[in-house]
Length: 168
Image (tube, rainbow, N blue to C red):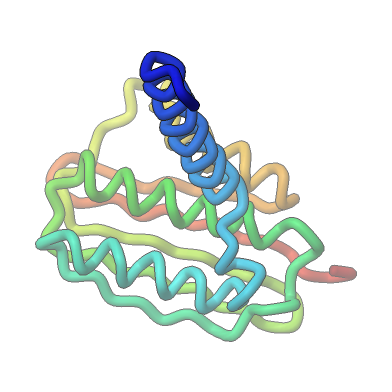
């Protein structure tokens, strides 16, 4: 382009388009992480837990049964998001020094348990919880499962999600 102003505008537009494309890639990755499809649910969960553990002073331990192919199509992303929300809550709110994640899968049921030794919380008596805990409850419902959240001040928090696998 002979015009310097046009060249400058083109460069700015090109940079804006490149940034927009990168943002779209990040958004689509957040919707369904590519490693979930490439590596399977168990490996994707391990990778997420280890990434969080590497960036936190909290000591994370986990035991995850093999679970690839055990859930109805699309349920793996829902389970992934439940674990992700629990880990986010532990990092942001718990003040924990330790956290454990278990996923037990047998022929009839999957049971996900995430526990921390953090500050815990008391129920407000009206069933009001934060958006993260509401999201966990809604995702458990979408899976056709049940969830419990046990917490008390100074005693940490335990989130359990049970999913029946019969017919899946």
